[in-house]
Image (cartoon, rainbow, N blue to C red):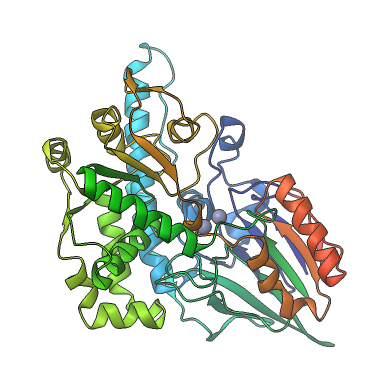
Amino acid sequence: MQVTLFGAAREVTGSCYSFETESTRVLVDCGLFQGPPRLERYNFIPAAVSPRTIDLVTLTHGHLDHCGRLPLLVKAGYRGPIFATGGTMDICRLVLKDAAKIQADDARRENSRRERGEDRVEPLFTLSDVDLVCELFQEVHYDKNVRLGSDLSVQFVDAGHILGSASLVFTVSKPDGNVKVVFSGDLGQWNVPILRDPALIEYADVVFMESTYGDRDHRSLEATLSELEQLIKSAITTGGKILIPTFAVGRAQQVLFHLAEMFRSGVVNPFPIYLDSPMAIAATEIYSRHVGLMDEEARQLNLSGQLRKDLSTLVTCSTSDESMALNSVHGPCVILAGAGMCNAGRILHHLRHSLDDENTIVLIVGFQPRGSLGRKLLEGDSEVKIQGRMIAVRATVKGLGGFSAHAGQSDLLKWLSPMAEHHPRVLLTHGENGPISELSRQIKRRFDITTEVPRLGQPIIL
Ligand SMILES: [Zn+2]
Ligand SMILES: [Zn+2]
């Protein structure tokens, strides 16, 4: 029995594990590397993962860094099943289609820039590759045992990260007893709205565990929400716009949920909310189709129609004309627009239009990489360049730290703790060196387990 990592080894993107038993070869995730070109050059299917040798794929969730190489896998000839929860199937379809469109646009732009006679660039994959991926989906339900091979079965359990997200608990039957191998997938925080908490797993012999935020805890949701409330009250007083650059899947729905809560409890009077992102609109529809995957509170609020009632001032903007029309709208209002990292998308024209207004509030609710526009705003730059123009920053810019979809250090340790009692092998993945070493130190201190940190392509014999 062996596991090999083809991504997310000492870094956070490109998740892809090959897991081989006597009878079966499974891929756990097949994600895209994202970020600098040095990583993106890994965006291919390595020869060691030849589709002819893969029996099946299991998918932990629909983020691009977990599903983005699936179209490459089908392009290379894979036609076996892809097991995923219903929520993941829908989110994966949305995310891959969006990525295919962006790649087609990028390739078109690059080709028009190139001279005649130069090589043409091709998108990594197209919409028809994505359609092929979707045809291979097989829906699985949480907590049900799914037989995968003569010696292998799997259980998907809730990971509390985004809708449909799962940790995978594999059981391998061997002559001398069963072996349990767990892949955490991406883990969420406890006590966030909409999602259920990550499921605690009682026993494992081997654990592959994400460590994105292994070195720190997030700000508490309570403190984050009380800051959000203050900022909203101040925007109501000044009549300012609140601009929230937002990730379409997960974050947008969570922010809407909190705004609905504030309206319902009467903390603030309802004001217009503009969801200015076709992808976030589609993701919100997916969420509302899968209320069965939500926590009890969110399920009730959806089923009773209360959430819709609370959000009666929500306006969705599908077309770019609708988006541009928001430039002439006055506050108080909230505009949720992509992209979450302020690197592209409609948020750019909102920022360009409103950053020089001292009544504008920009709320940064997600991670902003170094050098990005969002990071520059957070660092207090007094002028920023947007779409080729220098814009003075007079707006208030605030980072609200508590909305992460990822478990912080304490939640990671909490997740591991029931399994740790039985002293499993623990291998840390999906994290950079700093967070990995800190998490590793904590696991040694708390549970007396020495963790391992696998390298890309290195077979791990179990
Ligand atoms: Zn994720
Ligand atoms: Zn991830």
